[in-house]
Amino acid sequence: ELLESVIAFFQPKLLAGRKVVLTAGPTFEAIDPVRGITNSSSGKMGYALARACARAGAEVVLVSGPVALPAPVGVRRVAVQSALEMRDAVFANLSGASIFIGVAAVADYRPLKAAEHKVKKSGDTMQLTLTLNPDILAEVAALPEPPFCVGFAAESRELDTYAQGKRVAKRLPLLVGNLVQDGLGGDDNEVVLYDENGRYPLGRSSKAELAKRIVDHLAALLNGGAQREE
Amino acid sequence: ELLESVIAFFQPKLLAGRKVVLTAGPTFEAIDPVRGITNSSSGKMGYALARACARAGAEVVLVSGPVALPAPVGVRRVAVQSALEMRDAVFANLSGASIFIGVAAVADYRPLKAAEHKVKKSGDTMQLTLTLNPDILAEVAALPEPPFCVGFAAESRELDTYAQGKRVAKRLPLLVGNLVQDGLGGDDNEVVLYDENGRYPLGRSSKAELAKRIVDHLAALLNGGAQREE
Image 1 (tube, rainbow over the protein chains, first blue to last red):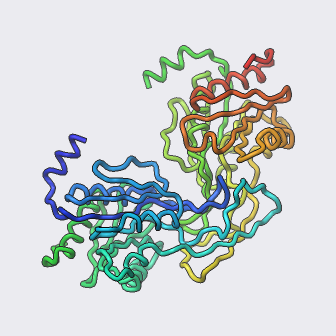
Image 2: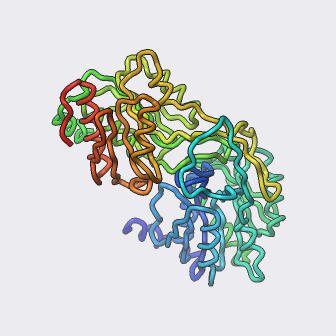
Image 3: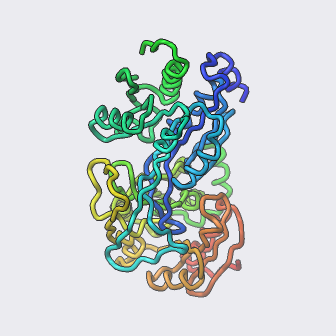
C-alpha cells in the first residue's frame, strides 16, 4: 500500500474528482450448480485499468466477474458471477459516475433455465437453449445523459472492421480493440484505440503500461483538450 | 523449496516408489476462440492431493485443466484445456503408474463443433448441441490391469447415494465425496470417503489436511494393511 501511495503520488491527476465504474473479467452463466458457460478472460486488462484510474485520482468502482486477482489498492470491488448480476451492480453504482469502462467479456448468451441441482448425464448428446444476455455497455451508453463510455472489443480477425463497427453502433466515444491471440490471459497485449478521429495503435506493451496510455487518451478526450500525440 | 523439503522429510513415506497420476481443475470446452463451457472447480483439492502424494514419496504427474495455481514442488504438471486433451495426457503418462486419482471436474459434455472464429451474436436464442465427453476415470479403471483408482464426486444433494453408486458403477476401490456447497472454491472442505467397507466422514478441515488423510487411507488400502481407524 505504501508503494502504491508513492506511485500514485507521482502520477498526474488526470481524473481527479471523477468517478469511474468499470467491469472486468468473464461472466459465469450457470447451467446448473457446478457447470456454466464462460470465456477465457483473465481480468488482467480490466484490473490494470482500474488501478490506472485510481492512480490518476479517480474514485473507482470495479464490478468484477470471477477472476483470481486481488482488488487493486484504492479500488472498491463488487464481485458478481452472471451478466444479469453484473448489470444490476453497474446500475446500482452508476450514480455520479462520469466514466464507464466496459472491459468485462460478458457472455452474450446464458442458458434459458439454470437447473437447481446438478444435471446427471444421460444420452450421447444434449441440447442447450441459450437466451441473449443484456448488453450492459450499450444500455449505459443509451442512457439520456450517459457517462463517457469506453468499450473493448476482442476479436479473432478483422479487428478494424469489427471494432469501428461496434464503436459506432453503440455510440461510444472511445473503443479499445485487440486480437484475442495477442493478449488473452497474458501480461502483455497489443491494442488499437478507436475514436471519432481515427485509429491509434499503441503497439505491444504490458497491460499496466497500456492501461496508463488508455487513461491518458480518455482523459484528453474527456477534458476536451487537443488530441494527444500517440 | 527448502521449507517443502523439510516438511516432506518428516512425512512417513507411505507412497515411496509409487507413481501417481492425478487430474485436477476444470476442463474448458471451447464453443469458439473465446467462449466455452466450464465449471467452478478451483483445482485446490487436486493440487493439495498432488502435494500430499509428493510429500509421501510418490513420483507425481498432475494433469491440470486451466487454474490459477502454481505447480506444487516436486510435481510434474501437464497443462491441458479440454477433456479430450486431458484424456490424451493421462494415457500418455499412465505407464508405470500404480495410482490414478481423478479429481478434475471434467465437463460431461462438449460442443459438438467448436467454431474457428468468434461467433457473432444473432437472434434472441441460440441452440447449442453438446456431445458426451469421455469418462476418463471409467476408462482408466476399465483397463485390463488398472492402477489403484480413486474417484471424486461433487454433488449438490443425496451424497451417499450418488457417491456409492458412482464408486460401484466405475469399480473404484476408493471414492471421495463432497457436497458442492461445502467446498467449492474455498480452502476448506468436508468430505466422506467411500470404500468397499463403508463410509468414513472426515469432517470439516483444510484441503491440505484432508489431502493428507486421503493419502493415509489410500495407502492403507493399497498396501493391504488393516483399515486405519478414522
